[in-house]
Length: 206
Picture 1 (cartoon, rainbow, N blue to C red):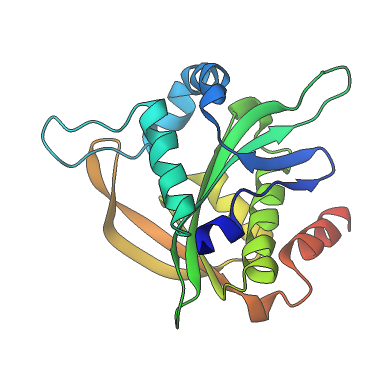
Picture 2: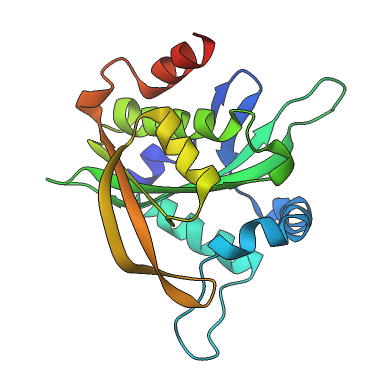
């Protein structure tokens, strides 16, 4: 029952929407990933098992929905409204995962965005929306984001939002065929009492 109380949820800020990922997103999601293959490949999760493969789109959605029902993940699509477009366009994905309740009250956040939409403030806005929902809506205390040291666009996102750099995690995740170092960034609810989105939007307009 607890999973049903936190999911599904849709979050909006201006033209940016975070909504649950669905099976019917397959065509748009697959096209977007294919078009962004070279942009995303260096940062892609991979299987450390010999011959192991990551799940299909259907398997990914099924697994994420199972985690959402168990209250351990929030699997969002990032979509954007645009004038003259009948429906918001899928431009990326954001997943809050590894949600831990009890004495930890923490989660990990990961994201990717279409290369043609990078640098426009979409990703920081989406991350701030999701973080605020976790802090203010669900009562979580800590949000963590782990990024490859070479991933400059992703590093700019956490820098813009004021996440603290907590140091290097050697060989933290299996990425693009090998165990890769990551830098760990975090934010706690006390650091953004008025909300991360409010701070981000204020800094962006100043």
